[in-house]
Image (cartoon, rainbow over all chains, first blue to last red):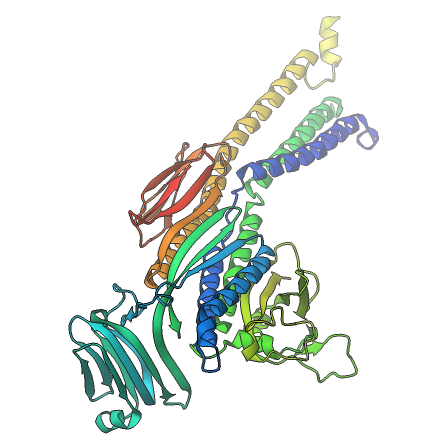
Length: 253
Length: 194
Length: 154
């Protein structure tokens, strides 16, 4: 009876409970503060690479498309440079507006001196058109039929176009310049049966224009052509990133 | 001899001390399991979603010389209407009279086999330029408002007059009639985990 | 009379000894708890630091790798990088300790003063060899076209 009626400990136990609740609340708050102090900052991924590559690609595509437009057969040849500049300026202005939506500033400028010259400069037959690009490279594989037109303006040592299928390889040699040669589909199939691939060997030794059109084994038409190499300078900047890149662009394709 | 006065005193003291001890031990245990673990999950989820989104857009945006990418073709044939996911397909929103108006293009093929399979909610928005210098946004796929840890991945697509953009989408207009440039579209894919 | 008091006294212990016992037991228990509390927080400190290092280290490695990849893409196009810079900041201290990040082409090492270390798998194509200290918080990661290397400057 006395045990049940004895209330003396109740205050002490009550005090214990109150202290414990207060301690738990304090601990949870302290835990959050420690967590804040321990938290690592700025560990997110960064979209720098994707934005820059996307911008490079659409600038390239736009320059190629503008060049094709102003040099197509219905257009006034004397106005081609001003038309090209106008289209690129419109593109640059509109592009800046849409990039500003993401808080990014862009500016694209172009150098058409290789094209705009009284004696235009033609590109090497390397992969990216510059003198130190890959000199032996494959343009296209799995070709069913194709027509090749090559116009060589300068050559320092022999340059070949190699047509290869799984068993045989036929070389078309070029040793002199200037030279303008067309190899059509029937001439190729006499030597090499389809499907074949077309490669340039020692492309760094020669420069000029080329145009290859045709169809692949699954009847899909293709075009590979190069007249000049134009340079574009792309400037892109955000609050924490600045990039200024110059890339060579092969026109028209 | 059976008086319990002193024993109760001792018992009170011991009980109070034990309660405090248990509380402190629990509190120490609680600080060891910091919520740092949930924060790493947050950051990693965002990074994972961003990589997934960029991969999807990268695969859709692949171009060969002379051809349009799948993404550009989707934008060109889109009719400007908004679609929502109803569990099996993308249904036109607000037009219950025509339940067969579904969105079915390259984008939805990809989304069906990647995001929908993993239960990741997604929205698609397109922003384009207008003639008076402002930007205009339209939704292609709408799935509600995104949560806090949503990720946006975007690609810019340039449209030309020669691409014959869809005249059904009256808001996508030619901003430069004097040249071949038609419009520049910002294609945004918003991803978040439910 | 005092003997009688002793004989009929029903207290389990006398008042003074009772107080001494209660007091000393409480003090000993509480001090033991507090000492163990400190050593436990020390351990959770180190674990917390290691987890933070992992997060930060992988974010930093991803950033440097992204610039490395971008440079490779542009160079393979035949392009020229006139300027490529990226600003970032690292927290001044993690769990109250300052730390250092050391990065070379083959490894990325984070080191704190209380000996918590973390090492990230890392590999870059372009040359980089830098040491960062956490007290200077803002850094710029840039690509140097002349030396064909990446640099980090405060």
